[in-house]
Image 1: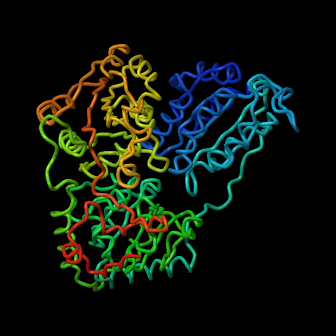
Image 2: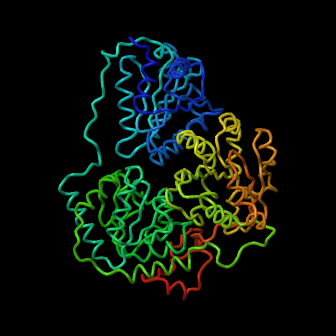
Image 3: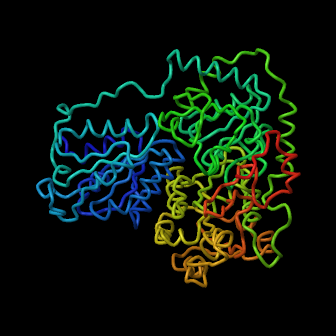
Amino acid sequence: MVKLSDYVVTFIEKEKVRDVFLVPGRPNAHIIDSIGRNTNMRYVCFKSEEAATMAAEGASKLSNRPAVVVLSSGASGTNALTGVADAWVDSTPLLVISGQTRTDEITSGAVRQLGIQELDIVQIVRPITKYAVRIEDANSIRYHLEKAVHLARTGRPGPVWIDLPSDLQGMDIDEDELKPFQPPGSPGSGGDGETDEKIEEAIRLVREAERPVLLAGNGIRLAGAQQSFLELVDRLALPVLTSRRGADLMPDDHPLFFGRPGTYGQRSANFVIQNADVILSIGSRLSLPQIGRNPKAFARAARLIVVDIDKHELGKPTIRPYQAICCSAGEMIRRMQEKLSEGQRRDISAWIQRCREWRSKYTEPRPNGHPPEDRLDAYAFIRILSQSLKPGEIVCVDGKAPLTFVMHSFRFKEGQRLISASGLENTSFALPAAMGSCINSNGREIVCLCEYRGFQKNAQELETVNKYRLPIKIFILDTGGYYIKDTQQDYFGGRYVASESEEGITAPDIRQIGAAYNLPAFQLSTRRDLESNLPEIVQKPGPFICDVRIDKSQKFEPKIVYTVKPDGKWIAKPLEDMYPFLDREELKANMIVDLLEEE
């Protein structure tokens, strides 16, 4: 016989999970005790469930393996929702185990609450998990654990949740009597004749194209296929673009890499994708930030071949695939490698040269100069930071402004990793994710880029950073307000309602926060600071925090903007027509495809 909570922890250990991210409470006391008695497990206590879940997210995104979060009940579960939603949207495998009140205190029917801290968390999380279940029979624990972990990591990965009442945690169970889970055939594994024919047709289309492009997404990393992807690129010898989550799949200095397209992408990359005649998209879900908010204008002259493990992504209304292939990115790459021959292909040297010209001329986001020396430009900060980092370093970044600046100006080197939560544009993600990445990688130094409001949501975890002496280099980008002010200036007559420091959107002195948690603190506020001090600061050992005072007039440029019609309808520009606008003749000269007429 074995105590059920001991069985759960041993199961986690057998899944090669070493680190558990947790917040203790009475409803999970048995599980906490079992973790503490297991000499092969490490646990990290967080101040908040939001941070614990996002730390597990960071660990999972770095390792490509399920990470484990242990929570209590009631508010402990609801506090974790943002992290779980992140994992759902970004296809990140997580196993969340929550404590629950006793089985005889769980309400049913119309009674809202019966037990202490009781809440039906399973019904709340079911829409944002691949599997969510409350254990009602102690002898079903093996089945549900095995099923949950199987679903978390197979097909399109994602979070799973097991809710475990406190009285069941302490029960003794007979391992020999436990029913196992028998997994069905793996979805998206391919192998059928129809998929073979589609792959052969995709190869033919790419080989015959005049202007082919390969768009690579994070599904390639989720499939563990990064190296085989690079080998495929060498064999196909065609231009490559990456999605936001796939930005670290290949170094920027690769001769076939031409950038990151999108609504806030690089102008040069947008020219490449908009002028393509065949696009092979592998592992990218072609989100609206990727293709723009005018989907009909996206790659309008191209035959779009979309490879996705999720059949629902292939049928969504914002894309019109010429060919849709439902299989994993890894399976697609492997089978393309098998089917590729050394046969004749069209000469695309002129097309590659054109892509190089675009990259040379239009990649820098602000070619017309930078703010004066007494101000700090965000793009220049990211550029100098990027130049100062070594190959193989790990960068965790918040959503919105920090991620946008990184997508424009960071130049990835060999082996560097980008850990982000781009699906929800989560602005409180970077700090806990950096902690999880650091713990998962046995204490490697992590560079952390925080949005200053989001940083304050999890600033309490600086005590955890200090306690475990996690070598995290935390840069906090203070932009002086919300970036809705960009939209307010462009479309609402410059009325900055609830978006600037004058409206109450203020931040404390970051250096004093550092002192409170016994962390060294630095500040950058001018271009002179940036050029003379940032390279030196980056080389200092972490942990430390650095307050980066971005120029308050900083804008996202280039970007896709809207035309506002007399009837109030907003029409997004196509990806090639970014603001600040090029002269119409210059834009026309850069388009092989016909320009769209204004609607």
